[in-house]
Structure formats: structure tokens, C-alpha cells
Amino acid sequence: LSRGPRFRLSAQQIRDQALFLSGLLVEQIGGEPVKPYQPAGVWLDLTLGKIKYEQDHGDALYRRSLYIFWRRSVGPTMLFDVPARQVCTVKQARTNTPLHALTLMNDIAFVEAARKMAERILKNGGETDSERIVHAFRVATARTPGEGERATLEKTLTKIRKNLAENPDAADQLLSVGESPIAEGIDRTEIAVYASLMNLILNLDEVLTKE
Image (tube, rainbow, N blue to C red):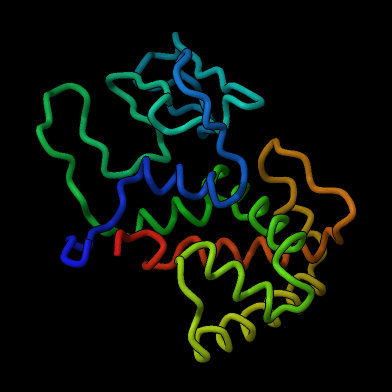
């Protein structure tokens, strides 16, 4: 353990980790393949419009990535760096490209996970912004943030809160992502504010890497 190599987690591990931290992960073992969120029309060109992707709903959206349905010619869009299924691949490649950040900050599954993680932090992370930030950071990275890190996150949270207060439509749009219901008894704007911060924390290199 003291000498294990440091490497970026696979796309499957990153997705499962985000679902776990958000409380959405369904840990059922076995069963049929599932079809989670995917942009419309991904299958159309390669199937000449004959096969349509029928998204699942409910718990099926939050099963482990191991159970996601694959077409040989079209892999799940949220799983980057996966090998092509047309040929045998002995070892999956690990890379670091801007496409990762685009997926992790915009894909429905990750935005929804950030929202649900925000709800957990608002419920159980303490009463002040500082306490909640420390709790969220520790949950995601398994360590307490340094003073500089905490100050930066507090400053970022203040900026997000100001932006969303001036743009309530943006807050509503963020809260509408994903099919899981919004927690009751928590201010909706605060959920949106913390969801934006959780999205940032889930994208930290330390969270996406096996340290």
C-alpha cells in the first residue's frame, strides 16, 4: 500500500465513485444489463436508424457500470478511454484529455450525482459553510483540506451563491438534471449552490486518481 502506483481511475470507477458519494449507487448484484442516461441519437447513424436506444428509469439508472449495456460498435458515451469492442484489447489505456472534464462536468449522471451529494452535505455536513466544505472534501478525498484549500473553496462557494442569486433560472435548470427527486425541506437555491461546488470537488485530480 505504501508503494502502490498513482494512476487515474478508469471511467467505470469514476462513475461508480460519483454514484456512491451521492448516495445514488444501487449495489444490487447480478441481473439484466441496464441502459442509463445517454444523448439522443447516438445509435442512429451506426444502425441506419433501425435501432433506438431505450433508456431505463428508476434504480436501473444507478447500477454499477459493470452492468451497463454495450453495443459492439457504440460504447456507452459516459465511459471514456474504453477500448473498441470490435477487436480484443489486452490492457485498457489510461489517458488524460479535456474530454474527461467535459464529460464529468456536463454528463447527466455526474451533474445529478453532484446534486444528490449536495443534498447529503446540506443534511449531514454541519451548520456552516466551512463545516460543510470540510465534510464534503473529506468524504471525497479521505483527508481534511488545508487552510488554503478550504479558503479557496469558501471563496468559490460565495461566488457561486452570488451568481445563482442573480440567475435563478440557472439554478432551476441545474436542479432539473436527472430523474431522482429533489430532497424536501432544503432550500432549492442552496442545493443548486452546493451542487455546483460538489461538481467541482468531484472533478479534483485527487478524487479522480488512485493516490
